[in-house]
Amino acid sequence: MEDQNRPILTTGDWFITLLITAIPLIGLIMLFVWAFSGSVNPNKANWAKASLIWVAIGILLSIIFFAIIGVSFFKGYF
Image (cartoon, rainbow, N blue to C red; front, top):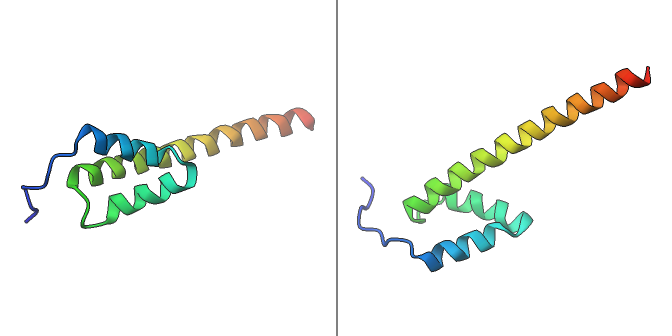
């Protein structure tokens, strides 16, 4: 059973968390650390998992978008 007596994350904690995730590669690595580490506050872990899902959706939509653009260019070329 999870420990229900974990400290509440303060505004300063969230400020630092968002600041770290704003750094391109470091932020992505830290999202994985926070999402899958057992010693992280459950609220931060759940937030990191949700953020990783959004990153995956963004990457997937970007691939689809660029594939559609690429196909339209090739069809216009030939």
